[in-house]
Image (cartoon, rainbow, N blue to C red; front, side, top):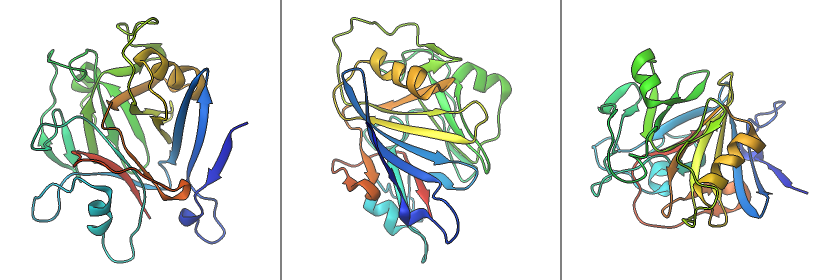
Length: 240
């Protein structure tokens, strides 16, 4: 039986909370799932402060908010260089910092196909990179990462059932109508195949994107999660 915890901090008087987090499991693996109602929540990306310095920590993101605003959920959101700059396409508040990369490259980011997480006022979508380049969607916020976990309902073609590569991993999937974003971080070391199956078979997201592995971290005060660690690059969060 899964324990479902509602984020009371997000609930306005008379309204149900639009962000929930829960610890869950699938097969032999354990996960934490945070679900965001994109139509009602201020979901956005964070990288730098007003002076251009990298934020890097959940506490610094929270401290950067305006008076009366509260960070109620956050997660690392894409790969970054040693200087914490984004590896791939990055847009924050409509301003592009890094262009879209469509070619092959090293590491997990270059395990094509990769993709982009695109956030707008009333929807969020995971879009495979070449499709993103073709349709050129407008995004208030966007972060490119890779590999894709699920592509149009199918697992990434290079994921192996018998892989021995196991790490803590995190990523995002979106519903077909773009109204719901599912953020998942594993609580046990998982393979890409196992992680992708959770999005495909449990959450049934048509598309899902890997954010990162060993550095994966979550801020979810409603379940007493504030994972420590080194400075991060792009961070996705919900502001209330």
